[in-house]
Amino acid sequence: QVQLAESGGGLVQAGGSLRLSCAASGRTFSSYAMGWFRQPPGKEREFVAAINRGGGNTFYADSVKGRFTISRDNAKNTVYLQMNSLKPEDTAVYYCAAGAAARNTVYVSLSQYGSWGPGTQVTVSS
Image (cartoon, rainbow, N blue to C red; front, side, top):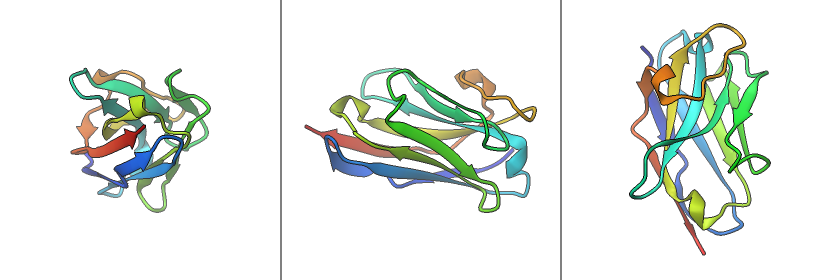
């Protein structure tokens, strides 16, 4: 399994931007599909965005489509989530996740991911 650590969370005003990073340990990062999930206060964890092993295939939740961008740098063992036009309803703990996958696969379900980071808090004020 791969170990993950998120960074880049914080407090931002509505309409602002943040970029989350997720650094992975190990030399097999490029064999994992990666995803971002979030858990708003008092709610269940939900899918945000996913990217395949090579970075050419992405998928987004409808709630973030057009505002968030997932990307990865396999040379740096890092996946990113660029978040623009943030809204108060984006407030949540954000988690990155890794799942062993075939080359073009993206995963949208929590159960498809075997490794999770501890999460980073994002708070959007109105």
